[in-house]
Image (cartoon, rainbow, N blue to C red; front, top):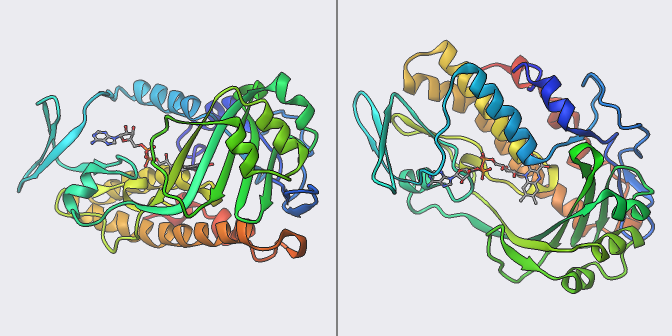
Length: 334
Ligand SMILES: Cc1cc2nc3c(=O)[nH]c(=O)nc-3n(C[C@H](O)[C@H](O)[C@H](O)COP(=O)(O)OP(=O)(O)OC[C@H]3O[C@@H](n4cnc5c(N)ncnc54)[C@H](O)[C@@H]3O)c2cc1C
C-alpha cells in the first residue's frame, strides 16, 4: 500500500523490521507459528513478506508530510456533532460552532464514530470481553528479556503477550491482552499497575514477567468492536476504518484496513465522480475484505488464547493464511 502511495521509503526508514513474527508457547517459548527473527535490523526493500512495526506517531508524521506536499490542509480540534446531507452538498457541524461543506463526508472517526451514530443511531460499540495492557520499556532495560529476537508473541490460555521494538530499536512496545468477564472502560488513560499485570501473567515465561517488571507506567483499556454493517454509506456520507468495521486486534490489521479503505475510496472516486456511485463501488470492494478480517480476527483470538498451547499445531491459525496476508488492494481494484 505504501509503495503504491510512494511512501514506502519514508515508512521503512521509521519502521522496525521484525522477521517472520514468531508465536511462541507462553511458558516454554517453543515456536508454535511463524519463524524466529533471523534479521539484523537493516530495512530491506519491502519485497519480502516480513512484519514491520511502526510507532503510530511516526506513521502519522509520514502521512502528514505527504499531505503537506500535496497542499492538503489538516484542521485538528474539531469535534463533529451533526451532519446535514443536502441534495447538492453535505455540511459538517462542529462543537465549536464552526461548519464545513463539501461534496462528500467520510466518517473516519474511530470505534466510537459520531458519524456512524448519526447514520445508525441504535448501533453501539460492543465490549469484546478483552482488556489490553500496554507499556513501553527503553531498549537498554529490556535487553535481558529480548533473547528471542525483536518481535515475539507469547500465546497462552485466555492471554496473549506481544512485545516488539519500535523507533529505530530504541524502545520496546509491550501489549498484553487478557480475556475477562469484567467490563473495562475504553480510554487510553486508565492506569494499570505492575502487580496487576504480574498477576494476569503469573507463571509466564521470564521474558514476559521480566518486561512487566520494567514497566515504569502502564495503561489498560477495554477492547470494543463493531457489528459488520450491510451498508456504510447513506447519501453523501460514508464511513472508513474503525468507524465502519472495528475489529479485535489479534491479526494486527485494523489500521491496515483503514489505510486500504482510503486507497479504495480514492480509486472509486477516480472511476466515478458521482458520489453515490463512487461510494457503492468503494463498499463493494471493501465490504467482503473487511468482513473476512473481522471474522478471522475473532478466530485468531480464540486460537491464540483458548487452545491448549501444549497441543497446538499452528496450521489452523488465520495469521498464516495467504488469502488474508497476501491480499493486494491495488491489484484487486475497485
Ligand atoms: C491493542 C491494539 C493493538 C492494535 N494493533 C494493531 C496493529 O498491529 N496493526 C494494525 O493495523 N492495527 C492495530 N490496531 C487497530 C488500530 O489501532 C485501529 O484499527 C486504527 O487506529 C483505526 O484507525 P481509524 O483511523 O479508523 O480510527 P482511529 O485511529 O480511532 O482515529 C479516529 C480519529 O477520529 C477522531 N474523532 C473521534 N470522534 C470525532 C468527532 N466527533 N469529530 C472529529 N473527530 C473525531 C479521533 O480523535 C481520532 O483522531 C490495534 C488496536 C488495538 C486496540
